[in-house]
Amino acid sequence: MEKVYPKTWEEYCEIDHRNPLAIEVQMPFIGRLKRYGDNVTEHYYSPAFEALAKLVELRDYYNGNWVPDWSETNTHKFVIERMYANEFNTGSTTMYPCILAFETAYKRDMFFENFKDLIEQAKELL
Image (cartoon, rainbow, N blue to C red; front, side, top):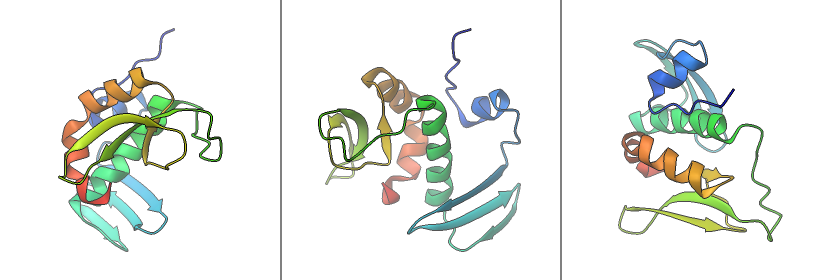
């Protein structure tokens, strides 16, 4: 069976059999977010942080078991990164860590197309 790649957070939650209003994540250097519906408990909270938490979960789903090895400088990782003018670039890198890194250009491009709105919301943290 071919893997289904969601195009929205809600689609992902349906595939993963979870409540789209329930988010719990701990991110080094950023903080902790625990949200269930309108009830938010946090160490640090902003809409950008919530968007980033969703993006990380979606990225991991798109990548499956693949995790970038940033010490391996001979292997390209396909990334979405924020540039100086607050615009986003899709490219590849071999050694500069990036939160939104993918195993293939195809997955990166599909992710960028599907989640531009969340990427824009998380811009200040990317």
